[in-house]
Image (cartoon, rainbow, N blue to C red; front, side, top):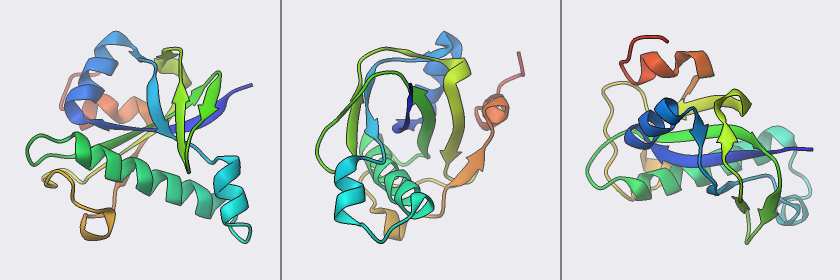
Length: 139
């Protein structure tokens, strides 16, 4: 069984993961029991959007200079639920288990730590569009 995890990143991290063809073990956000219990009137779409925004806020925190926030959506094996929506996956996730990537629109730069309410809406990218997102030739 796998768990969907939204992993905060930057374009630099995404590029590294693209070359390695895997996302290393790490932290992200997931629709956790705590989220479902704390928001019982929510539905899957609302919970997933909340998780995406939490990961986007964390991605802004990874920026050392203005840049694009990136959130990688993947299906991880064993996932430990932490506080709130936070989750940890302890095994690298192969590229084929990525579901999508969200990123700020091209030409947009977000300052480190900018809250999601002040940042632009993230764009959705299919996994096969990652080379375009990174301005790389397709493999």
